[in-house]
Image (cartoon, rainbow, N blue to C red):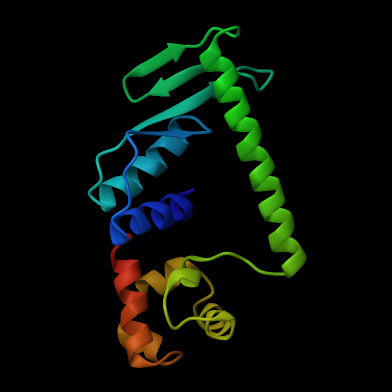
Length: 161
């Protein structure tokens, strides 16, 4: 969730795209907190709501940082959110099938200029996790990639904080 939100809204800033008035996350307060953390790190002020589900996994309320807003099961809002969730779930399932079929794993490294599959594998071989990459110095990174690419990696990971 962190990486997806970061990629999307980093691109919104970088490409000067239209900012939404509201982000709806298909999850509860935990997912909302992750989205808020990323938006705060990018200095973006966008409202966030989550979807609360009942024990049958049906949406029954919107969650805000101030409380819950019940949703009537027969309302247009409920049906709209239900269709939206179905679409998101279908997209996610197809995306993961596509990744598995290609043998690729998405990473924040994919968006950094100068890093292709070969360099990505070398970086991950040395540092194992994105958390270790985040802690690495430019000199550490230069053991695997050229100086200019190491600087780009540092810039991206420094902006995550």
